[in-house]
Every structure is written in structure tokens, then in C-alpha cells.
Picture 1 (cartoon, rainbow, N blue to C red):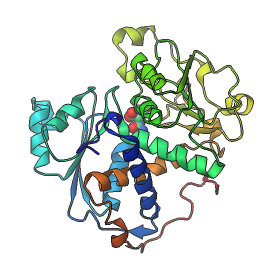
Picture 2 (picture 1 turned 90 degrees about the horizontal axis):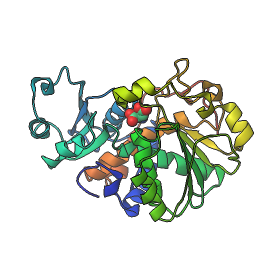
Picture 3 (picture 1 turned 60 degrees about the vertical axis):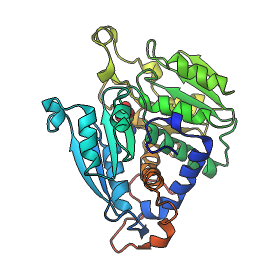
Amino acid sequence: MSRHLLSVDSLTRDHVDHLMRLAARMEPIAQRRQVTRVLEGAVLGNLFFEASTRTRVSFNAAFCRLGGSVCDTTGFTFSSMAKGESLYDTSRVMSGYCDAIVMRHPDQGSVAEFAAAINVPVINGGDGPGEHPSQALLDLYTIDKEFARLGKRLAGAHVLMTGDLKYGRTVHSLIKLLSLHDPMRITLVSPPGLEMPSHLVDLVASRGHRVEQRDSLASDFSDLDVVYTTRIQKERFTEEMSESFAGISEEFVVNRAFLDQRCSDTTIVLHPLPRDSRPGANDLDVDLNGDPRLAIFRQTDNGIPVRMAIFASLLEVDELIEQELGPVRWFVPKRLGVDDREL
Ligand code: NCD
């Protein structure tokens, strides 16, 4: 694996399999049944120049659960970039303070530019509409785990991606990651103007997958294994687009009726979150809350073992994990959410 994690492009199938196995080994720690101090003394720099809750906090928590400490900075306002500092300078400065850096930035390519200046591992936590590789890894880990429970296989699976496929960086990384696997069927449904970039569609098709683009959810999805739905990334629209975009229509909403009428009992629903729950946003419907097919909170929980695996691999402590385990001494509830189901 390369020094940094900037794009799924740097991962081979072997790297991905290794990270998935490593994440599974992190589960006892992530589920707060055991503790490790394997990264004791290490410091993570979390640099977030765009809004974030789960990515920032889960990277932070994952590093802490490995025994490390975290320095956090959010927004441009309180960073030296507001004084005109270049990515190069900020990068070199941060490498003197931290052993790993996670960065989120509104410009595509900016995290790679930042990483090019240093040898300390950098993880892309989202670069504008570019990529979000750690999210794709946790999405894949979730699919693998859910499929194991349901007795399904990824090879030959049918995956639907819907919502903003143009600006949604999570689907850009995920479609590349899925394409490293045995052929499957991928259906893409987006509102007009928000289609998946054609170079990604072509890449996935060239790797032997069956890719189909549709403009509506109103068809038979009874063989569907996964629906991955995303938020409309309005913050990335040009002024012209914002003016012409009347909002996402109700036809694109993934809700209980869609799942009951068009999908099956074993179709799982994923979303990178946040979902926009404001009236008229027509994002993933809350009427699926409590439905076992809704895997979104199992998906967010999986962010911890997967991000721990990424750190352990980049900082080369993956072989030390089992040697370091100790007992948990504090109270941990059996079920985290009141709506969580025993599956
Ligand atoms: C996404 C992101 O920031 O790309 N969220 C996340 O990291 N889980 C998706 C989004 O903002 O819609």
C-alpha cells in the first residue's frame, strides 16, 4: 500500500482484502470489549476545512481507540490558510507535529497536493467532489458484513446507486472499489444533470461489470441486493445550476414503499450520511427507521474498525494488535441505539 491513502486508485484487490481482514480484527476494540495502546505516543492531525461530523469524529475516535492522541482543527477561519498560507507550507509544518494527517478540503486534488510535500501518511477525508476512499472502504466492509449475515456473495450482486452521482465523492470512490471485485451488476439512477461522470462508468464497464444508467426508480428491483443512496450536494452546484435546480423530485426518494413494492426483504439500504431531513429535500426517508433493511447506523459504526485498520496499516502496527489487547473497565451498553435490532 502506498504511504498515503488519497484515492482508491492506489489500492489493489490484495490491499483491500488485507484492510477488510484487519478491520475485522479491530472489532473487539471498536465494540469496546477490549483496549489496545498500540499507537501510544502517536499524534493524529485532523484538518477539516469543510463540514463534517462522522468522518472527523470517527477518524479521531479510531486513532484514540488505538491508544493515540488527536489534534483537531476545523474550518479556514481559525487556520493560517486564512492568512494566505499555501498547502505546501501547512503540510510541512503539520508533518513536524503529527504522525498521521487526515484532511478534508473543498477543492478536488488539494489533499494530494498537500500530501505530495511530506512523508507522514495523509488520508483523504474528502476533496471536494473528488474522492472519499475511507468511506468507500467502510461501505464495502458493511456490504461484506451484511452479505455474510444474509448468506449472499458480492460476485454477481446487484447494487443500485442513486442521488447525486455527479458531485457525491463517496459514490466515486465506491464504484471504483467495487470494480476491483468479480463482475457484478451496477445500476445508476440520478436526477437529470447529476449523472455519474462518464469516465467512471467506462472504467467500471471496462473491468467487466454490467453498468446500466436509468432516469427513474420506477421499475422492478426485485433482485436488488444493495441500494446506496446519497444527498444532493447543493453546496457544490455552480450558481447557474442552483438557479435552475428546482429540487429533487419525490420519484427519487428511497422509502418504505419503494423497498416493499419494488425490492425484496433482503435488499439493504446504505447512505454515507448525513441525510437531509428538511422538508422538500427528498433524501432517504425516515419512514425506514427501525426497519432491519436500513443498515445506515451499522454502516456508521463500521467506520471505526475500518479507520482503525487504515491507521494500523499506514503506521505499520498491524502485526502488533493482538499482543496489545487488555480488558475494558467502563460501562458499555449492550445495544447502542434504542431502535437497534439484534440481527
Ligand atoms: C459525505 C461527504 O462528506 O462526502 N459524508 C461523509 O463523509 N460520510 C456525504 C455528504 O456530505 O453528503
